[in-house]
Image 1 (cartoon, one colour):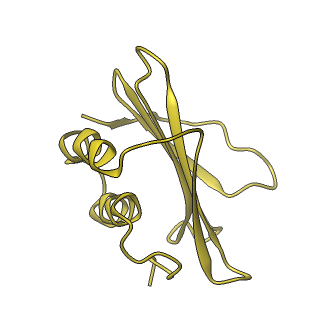
Image 2 (cartoon, one colour):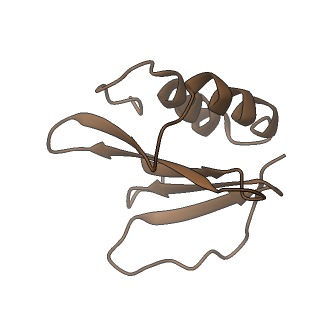
Length: 112
């Protein structure tokens, strides 16, 4: 189950960051200055073997979302990894990550 790290270091000039982890997965989430709109996330998995990361961010200027990976990945496998560990996450966060991972709402503002 993903749990939140308290007092995560914030980087001046960057969006507010929250960090969730379990023994094999990290989920780092960035929020806008209001703290309400998710502007991006990075999901790192398989930490015990060959770690992989998926990074998503919302491009406000272009009104597009961009998902990039550090190699090939299986959407089905990532969703299978994410589903059971996301049950304690805030609902809006788990819903957004799930929709991005499944390919729903591509290039749409998923925070509206």
